[in-house]
Figure 1 (cartoon, rainbow, N blue to C red):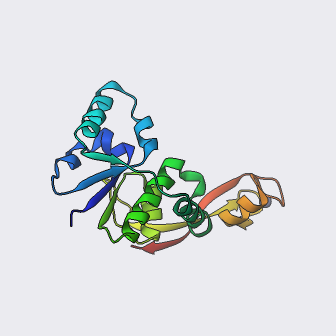
Figure 2: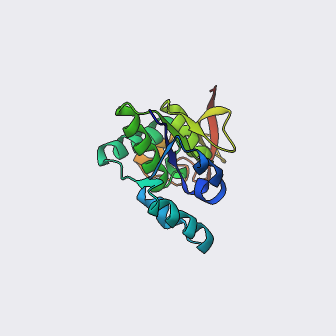
Figure 3: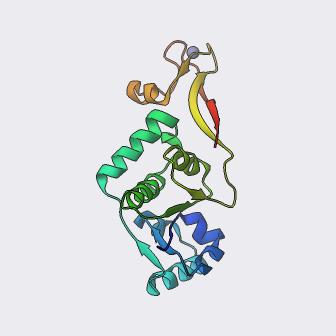
Length: 175
Ligand SMILES: [Zn+2]
């Protein structure tokens, strides 16, 4: 069974050598196509699409909601992940559920962190060494908030003293 590589924009821009692997299947999500705007990379991308070397697949809504919730509730990464990031991880999970051998190719450390949390395999030219769970601490009074609390309360600042909140790692786990 050919391994499926789920690739992000960074791979198209900077890691073109990945496409030399003829034993793999390459997939991505629609948003990635819109992120490649410069002419040289655009030509490269269009060649891939014309040769059917790259398939574009949209993840299902239910998977996207699940992934969004995981990112928010368990990692505090929601604010660092774009719609495209969430879509890529959702698509990878979907393919894995279908029994496929999937590898997410991304240099985005937040995407890697999320993939790692979901036990999805990932590759990047830079790769995270640790899994990080984030919380937010007030610069003034030191009160801490989980990402979930911040989203539920719709807070941008400390509700006790009004100071700015800073993101800090809560737990760092070995991968
Ligand atoms: Zn405070």
